[in-house]
Structure formats: C-alpha cells, structure tokens
Length: 78
Image (cartoon, rainbow, N blue to C red; front, side, top):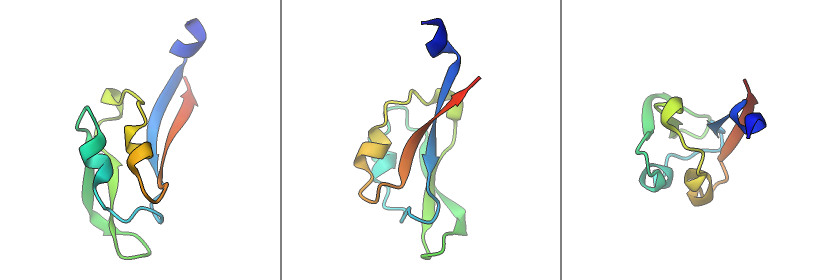
C-alpha cells in the first residue's frame, strides 16, 4: 500500500485529438471536467480539461467514454 500512496494519477487530454464532444464531462462522477473555451486545437475544436486534479479519483470513466481515445490517465511518482 505504501507504494500506491507515492503515485499520483492524473487525467491527460491529447489536445489535438480531442474534439470537445463533452462525453467525458457527463461521465465524470466528480464533475471536474469542462470544455475549455480559451484555445482551439489544430482541428478547430475547444477541448476538455480537468479543472481540479486533486479531486480526480482516477476512475478512468472519462477515458472509457472518449470516442477518440484522447484521454489517458497518467501515473506520476511523487
């Protein structure tokens, strides 16, 4: 268990692959994903982003729902 506590898991969005469909927004049980509206990707879409990494429970529902496989759960060592 001590080894698991040293790992952080974060949602990672492939900016150019995301088309902003919003399925991840509805799938997130913590409601911490939104479609940002500051910057368009190379395909002309606003993309999703996690607005509170600390509240993410790494359930991967967002990644499972993504039809473009634009979301991964990244493991980061503390």
